[in-house]
Amino acid sequence: MQTPATFSSLVAVGDSFTEGMSDLLPDGSYRGWADLLAARLAAASREAGGPGVRYANLAVRGKLIRQISDEQVDAAAAMRPDVITLVGGLNDVLRPGCDVPAVCAVLESCVRRLAPACDRLVLMRSPIRRGPVATRFLPRMLELFDFVDALAAEHGAAVVDLYGAHVLGDDRMWAEDRLHLTAQGHERVAEAVWQALGLPAQSDWTRPLPPAVRAGWAARRLSDARFTRTHLLPWIGRRLTGRSSGDGRDPKRAQLLPYEVPLPGAALGTEPGALPGAAPDAVPGADV
Image (tube, rainbow, N blue to C red):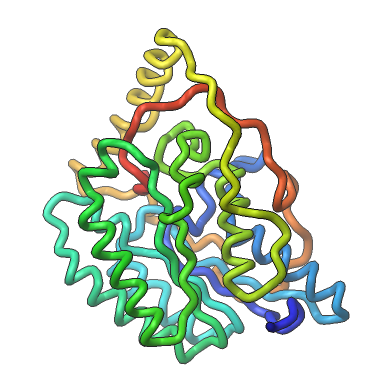
């Protein structure tokens, strides 16, 4: 097993999930699982007398797998870090008429370029918010996830099975937009990746939440109306006009630089209070 000090550099590649939505900080920026992982690796390295960690996060919300391939993969490979994480393709399979084999072909190209450029490549089976919409797209998702498993086996990559973790399908792990994980969800993902790197567990990231207390009918309808107005209608508008929330947006952390101080907020392994009630199903895990 490698020690924490072994991993001195981390590059994260992907879309809004890796950018950190919707783990919102007080200043309006997003933290997310990759930042949490970088903070933990940096702290562990320094505790072992190492130099800390250099960290880059090239992820941009709304990106499809072809855009990730064209805009992020070669840049990540050129950095030649110890660890690269790659998560992408779910935005593609949630769109009408998606050619899943074509998505898989681009994903394979990404892996072939990234695997030789790092000591450890980490892939993921993405978390899915359970419900009727997820069920509708499930065959495509599973085709993508099975391909991720095959790629990992071929290239010696680690796979983090977030889809298989029942707790990450719990409504309370998803933010008000019903598209992205909460802070608690991102904390679970950071722990999962930490363990996938062969590092000692600090918590059980698959632990179920306490039983939910269902909100009343009026509260659920008010939540539905707010979600539709604030999140769903703008999302539909962008789809109809061919726009993305990531248009014109720079990568979160474009250069591989020392990661100095963990960002404020809950520490890894904490369990913030669960959100009240259970929201009805919406587009699972898609970018806004």
